[in-house]
Length: 359
Image (cartoon, rainbow, N blue to C red; front, side, top):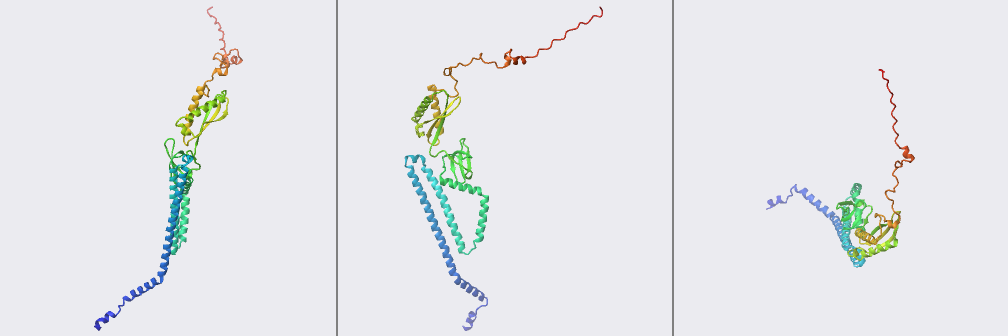
């Protein structure tokens, strides 16, 4: 027994390095486990705070959007607000703004948390920040048009400058808005074409679908017409238009004769105006012009472009036979006619008689 147990008790030379390495590893772990634990706890705390802050910010943005929608519904409940405020459009705009704000908040919170985690791991952030700064400058110079378009689109949505279904004049193009994006706005032109307008290229916007529109009609009459009679006729035609369907819904105010806009040698211009629904000004102008023309013709009021009546002027027109000669050559006794008369040909030379040699 003693002989057989003696070899087992002896340590092999090859086991010494492994035992030393295990002892060193255990000592290293024992020395650094507290540091690892503190780093892990700090990382966990940073991530926890980031997720909680992100959730709170997104919830605050959602409540802000809901409050905006409630204010839009309150404004829509009033008679005038129902005409000026589109609740569905306001809801879509609020949803778009909320989506953009939530994305930006998430990016900022989580990006800051990632940098704090890297700093906790004792990673030098100076080269990373320098590289990010250089890359940002390069992207800023290379994609400055893209950044400009994006920022312009964000502010257009925030300020509610226009929405889908509005008729706008964007300077470079005009038409009905069919899509509003953060970079490009799509317009449907009058001939059916689709315009893709970059938001950064839009310097001015004329929205023809917000509030109300104005229909203006200029009536040209003869300078010898009675202005009071013309005013009465036009006012009667406008009152008839206001009382007729469906124009009574498109007109938001009575037709008003503003007065004499201009006086020329052969005409007078009377300006007529009416406040209409947005987008209905052109149709109201055509119908109002039609009715005013018919009313003036029925009353015998002459407009520009009609032949002049002899009974109005009292001066007979000169007949065609009494017209002045077209030129001085028509009067043979005039000096110009005599000067311009053709020169007569010279007389032929006299013939000389040839003597006969036989005589």
